[in-house]
Image 1 (cartoon, rainbow over the protein chains, first blue to last red):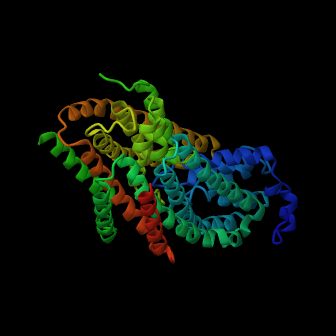
Image 2: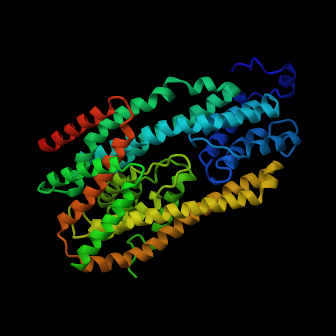
Image 3: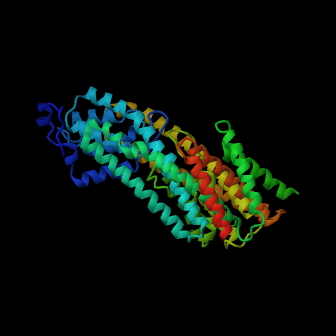
Length: 267
Length: 233
């Protein structure tokens, strides 16, 4: 671990316990807490309490220990409003821990904390929710469509998804702890910048292949209806795409399905 | 009252655990319909039928990804309900009984909608609790911070349990009543569900990739490969 170039000498002596040098057990505790970072998510302070919850074990190492003035002031700072993608929140948690243990001025830490909110939300949304999750989901649907065994389909999905998920969480915490307030550079790395595009391209191909195969397995043996269904699907999908933003497909489907059920019972 | 083979409480417990995974802990996508419905099917002795209904619901769920603070259906508990309903009636993947998939998917999506509303309610309750303790938070009270997190976890777990149990208590008799009066042929019934699911999924995939360079062509190429594989099979 490299010492921060801009940390004042006074701060270094007052707070000798650098973030990245935290014991493994403490890092594991923070990592486990990160898995529950959204437990009290709400519309008032979003992830705020979660950030405080995750930084708390490391803040006990501030001068005065748990309950001391430095600990309480730092915990209060980090339990305020915060927004980030939950998998990338580790960047903020790690960086804030490091900044506190390095003895950065509170005002600077608060400005840094505010600046982190936006990027950690949008980068994570594009990488995970819009790219990695759909890709893993469509790979699982492809395996299902190819006749995969239930445990293989489900197990394969969970293993694949969570390799990416846990690696991202682990990387985020590591980057935060090791770079402190200099994390901006890491957020511009190729995986975060180009990853959504690469995953999106892979997802597009896999999604195209998975849809007809999954459809065929659900419909079951015999293909007399499949052609009609595929044509109906294409027409419906184009219509939904045109209606994007005005109506959600699942709501339309719920209404259509309810109508069909009523028709099938009443006729 | 007809109960699932595994019993109402174990099934509701599964719904609670998977409902918790949606947001609160650990977001490992155990709550995706593909996983949740398969687990519900396995719990009730029919893992393959659970997978089939899970894959069908997964197609709907592709449209509702949990972006930021958006409001979305809660698929974890809902897929447990749908997987239980489908595995209770269908039994085998190839059984193809009339109306079973329609009813299971309808009640699954309806439960996911109610579940989404319950998550909004929970977040409002969490917000009220945080506001009530705002002075303790500003004073850096670790007891308050940890208490709010644990309360949120417990409340979300309870939410999933109550939702799954209530949904099963309502939908199992409703399913029995609907199936006893069902008049549409099994294959046509299933084709309607699958067409709706794939329509939603097709639209969702297209929207996800339309801004990605070359992705539209890759999607069409994948579609051709999929159709060709069907032709070969």
